[in-house]
Length: 163
Ligand SMILES: [Fe+2]
Ligand SMILES: [Fe+2]
Image 1: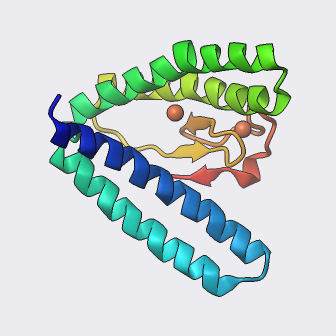
Image 2: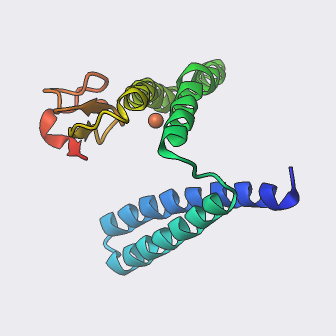
């Protein structure tokens, strides 16, 4: 791999992380009563997204939608069948309950994400209109309509976010 490509991959990862970190920091700043700091965090978070997207485009990381769906499904598959199970084992060995909880919460939702991506691969040319409903607590997604309660974490229907 060229040094340029290595740099693009590392920058994409770093800028993507900075984006999420700044959004979390903005939320905290709001809670602490510092709305101006929150504003700066949100503006900078948006800037990091611009940088991340540019790096991803430049490294050829955005392909056709069919290819992108396959890549997304593969990534989700890796996360819930390999990455999280390994991390959970390590965290169990260390008795880190908070880490185990965070990993498990994500792992179960990733399995659902993979299923939805695979369905979309099959449905891509069929068309049809429907919405997706996201659990804001655990990241579970339901197609069509929100469940009465999140099947993974019990969050009530009213809190689901529609896409
Ligand atoms: Fe996911
Ligand atoms: Fe949930």
